[in-house]
Image (cartoon, rainbow, N blue to C red; front, side, top):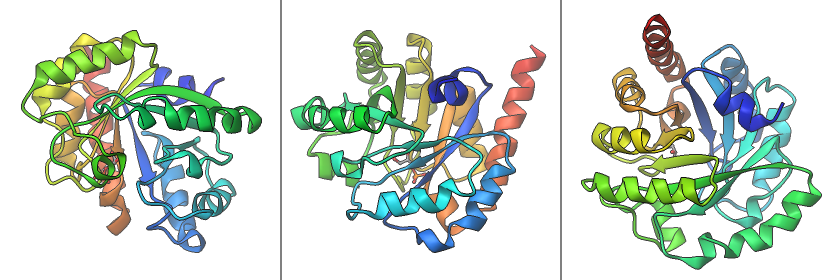
Length: 247
Ligand code: 1GP
């Protein structure tokens, strides 16, 4: 089965854990991955960051691979982070207008991905809210946090362009997660799975995003300092799934 189906289509709501190669010591990652293995609500492990030094992604994946029982999916900041994983989010930064992140990096990366025989998951990637490291590095302006109509139009265009997923991100470590209003507007306008990330730190944040319509949420920063947060997020996901399955 494709990683896309396994992680995003054939399951209830779920969450993914984002590990940044630049902030993670690959020799110390084993306990975190063992913890992730025990949590059924975790669909995948995402690997990536905006500022990643050469080679660190490969090293981290090698350490994770020996222990992980979940798919490992690259969430690359640029073409230099491409290396062998179970799949890659082939991101088009559709909230921006920088051709480099709409087609430039893709042309450079596509032959590498093909040579690695890696599954590419076409993803419409949208930054929303305050400027973040990703908006700075990509030289793009995020969508305004208070304009659901713009976010919705962008997501619909992303789906029409053939993206298999829409990922809306407030940016790693965002003060505020994406609002329920934007999530619910976008979720009701598209039929592909919707991933929401950035600034989700608690049971309540997770629950709000999932009730508003996220199919999968991403937890990065919060798990870096305290991996027990993963159990809190898992209970939010399972609580929502229970309600959905009852109806
Ligand atoms: C960032 O969506 C991810 O690209 C996760 O954000 O690190 O704030 O959880 P956090």
